[in-house]
Image (cartoon, rainbow, N blue to C red; front, top):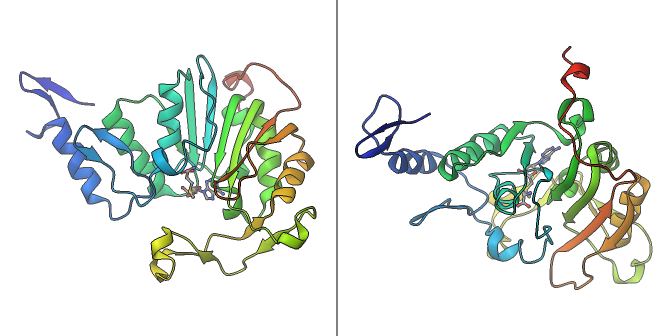
Length: 261
Ligand SMILES: C[S@@+](CC[C@H](N)C(=O)[O-])C[C@H]1O[C@@H](n2cnc3c(N)ncnc32)[C@H](O)[C@@H]1O
């Protein structure tokens, strides 16, 4: 960690101030997804601003005091740090992309956060490895998955409370009551709306884009209960809230039964 001298914290073995060191690390990254305020005059230069585009619609529970929270597909950690500010006792974040975890850790240092990010695929979630969670945040990941039902089954295995989920949807007005998903075998355009013709924002990791009915049916099929659509307003992100079939306090993994023992 950081040494302290009379002028404030310094990076190890250098004269850099802590803030300068963080700023240099932010600038050294050639890509940021999320805008995350780090200091009064430093925000990560992501193209997506979760504070205005997501948080107002994603229904993150207001009070997370004492909760174990899992943030799946955390990217640079916006929702992990938000959960911590809302009182979570422990925040575990996972992402399958190594660069996300590295950038998360820059933000974690800057914010003095205790949230921990692991390089982990949603398919590798298991209560033996990660324990169980009171709240699972599953935002913006479903449509990136080749195996969405498998992912939901893994999530229900670690959730003993509430899952909040947001996904891109594709709705055919003639088939709103039919559970269906559009398959993109070779990816789909992504990025900011104003860049919709920019090939730089083509995303080869978009596979299945379901309609609203399909989202609810998949979540139900995986074993969740009390599934609620937060809203059906097509102008805002599609979010659902679902309960685990077993409601219990989230627990850290039991090291006596850990898979490495
Ligand atoms: C669109 S971003 C959403 C980030 C954040 N949850 C949000 O809503 O702002 C999708 C994230 O999910 C991650 N991801 C994609 N597939 C994944 C998988 N199979 N397991 C875990 N993370 C995954 C990506 O690396 C990326 O960081």
